[in-house]
Amino acid sequence: MPPRTLTGLALAVGVIGGIYGIGGGSLLGPILAGRGLPVARVAPAALAATFTTSVVGAAAYAPLSLASSADVAPDWSLGLACGTGGLIGGYLGARLQPHLPERALRLLLSVLASALGALYAAQTLHRATPVTDLFGLPSGGDVG
Image 1 (cartoon, helix red, strand yellow):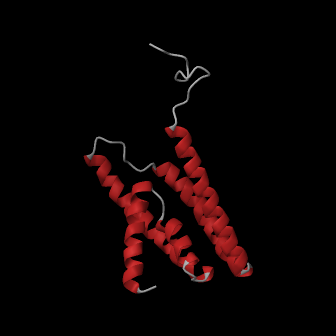
Image 2: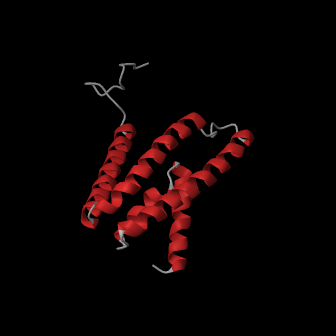
Image 3: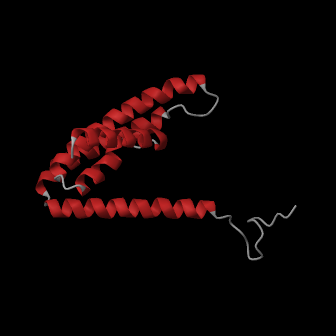
């Protein structure tokens, strides 16, 4: 992939990551692996992208919370709890990855990405559809 294309892709991933609060590697990793790069090369790059976008995103949201009436402040305790788990899991995954065949890594990545995509779509569609009772009234039976 040419450097300009990769930079443009990373920019788009950074914007999406900033909007949704996901690390850039969550999107960039599957894209790069799908383009044929070996997972052993993609994994460290995706982790570096996730780290970078996470630090920049948190640094951007913190001052925004002081200047905005919206609730945009980072939840530091939740972030640190997730970060601790991610740190330990990332270390264990990095140690395990060289011992797994490339084909198994690609299959696992594709299954995880597909399952998460299906889960997000199902949750979104479920929430977008008003919950009604047997008579078509909004859940709870309130008609007034």
